[in-house]
Image (cartoon, rainbow, N blue to C red; front, top):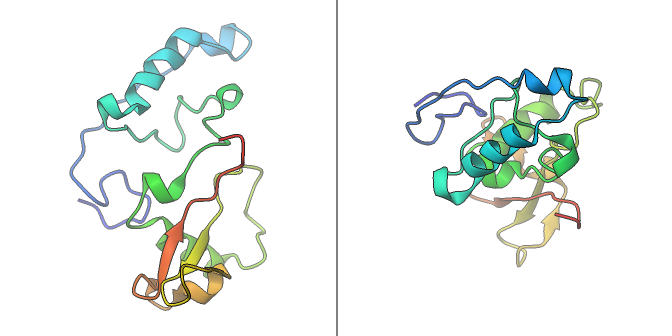
Length: 141
């Protein structure tokens, strides 16, 4: 186990392996066979497996970027990472164009009412005793 918030082994031991998709570079950015394999790895049959942040496997055209659910992928640390982002980049200068870097929370004491995310952050990260980390997904997901 590692202590990094978005480490693949932050919550349990894992096995990692590397796959590269060089076909996409010669095929207009598409490789349906590779994505079919990724679909199996990302399914409940295999875990689901977590995709490396900087490697092949994020197929923009199939909703894998848009429909990424950080709260489900990293249930114990996603909102801790969101609190660190809020603290270190309060104005979103380094936010980029990806839609996956979004956080939401609800209050455990207010009938699960959605609250301003920053209210659930403190010096030790996400206040798990007071808040629940929520998924942020577009309606099409």
